[in-house]
Image (tube, rainbow, N blue to C red; front, side):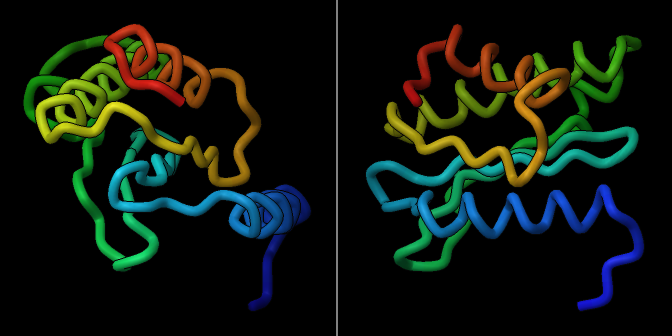
Amino acid sequence: MAIKNKKESRRFRIKKTIRKIVHGTPDRPRMTVFRSNSEIYVQLIDDLNSKTILAASSQADEIAAQKCTKTDKAKLVGKLVAEKALQAGINNVVFDRNGYLYHGRVKSLAEAAREVGLKF
């Protein structure tokens, strides 16, 4: 896979290292984050069965309707995914930052999910 720039190739190298260690199971799924320029997406994935259990994003109606910064949207997505997970009976997850640095939007999403009661 030809990667165009240094920053992207660095993220893919870190991502491969993380994925060697982090695996999701049905009782403790992998919570993976994808960050685009304007949106943020989260999935809870069961790697044993290769299934997405649930997902949330900043494009959800209740989040997209609000005028706020990208970091604030990430907090709202973190709360939303944690509430969905707790309703589905999932209390523990494994956090996969997907090669992104743990600061900014990724950090605010994770902290908001922890505040609601998700453990990782």
